[in-house]
Length: 429
Image 1 (cartoon, helix red, strand yellow):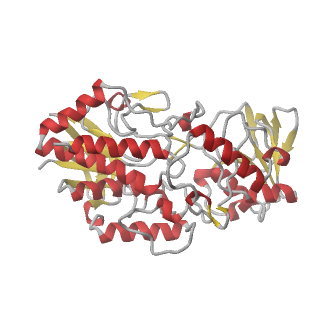
Image 2 (cartoon, one colour; image 1 turned 90 degrees about the vertical axis):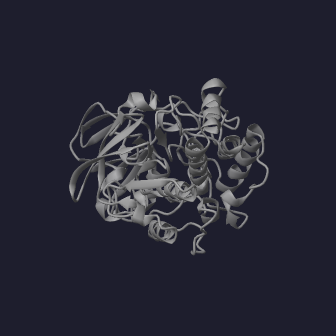
């Protein structure tokens, strides 16, 4: 039986290790940090976690189906989630598969497989694998935009933010209003001297609870067509949260769910209380002054960039992953069409996909790798499908914004349906 490498011990890497383990496939795992958990370990140097972080999807829609969380909290904290991943890894014997404090430095193709060079406590080593699974996460390489002018104060990306103590007494401008930016804004109003948020476009705000239940547990049955769901949910949100335009946000130039919604309505409460305010897009820096595109300006000590992350697989040349623009072009966000022995886990974003959706990715991959070993004809039929037919539509009928961060976004129902369909095709005799 061939041996495969898994890079990363976060949720996606653990999913891959578990699915391959169930198929009897040998795995060596590599993790640059000291233990499992990935970004959910706030002590991991690559983690984007902060002290106040909690799940933005609810526990029951996020957990692994075969290993429910012991917590009964609907939206657990990062500390609870780290303990969950540690328990998951220990329960299934995954922890022992990984080499910790070991960074992958380089992947090079050789003899139908890959030479993996790593650096760890015992120095640098190179090992050959039949295939390598890239599961090193999507939220580790900060995306830092360029601005005209120079800022005399401090500029920080949210990746560097850990505690509201970093904001104490400062005049803070948060650039961007994604979920992390809104979380930090809520932190900031209790510690900073003032808080402004600079936004480029409008957002949809989803409350964590609707009708007394976590909002993402509603309508878990047969999915509604995109246009019907957008129309219904827009009306429900307006009834529960009001119109964000009244709080200073621009009107969204897209329909709901065509970009990731904000699961934080406390921001609207603080805007209504005057604890923070919305500013236009940044035009330029001028010392401590930030000038905005609506010809207004403000004085700040700290500019906090909530501007997201870029995909980063620095140990392998992009040509091997068929990069197109901001992301690799992969079948179901996993398989290069060349089937060159590289596979990607976790390069997928979808509202409500959860870790079970990522585990279903791993099940498809494990089924294919098992077929490659035990029934090459079945594996070849799968490869022929990937290269010979139109790839499945995983948008679910939604027209996602043409943004870098949306380049690997999918609809959870369409995507999970495609994963299950393709797995059945691989396993068919």
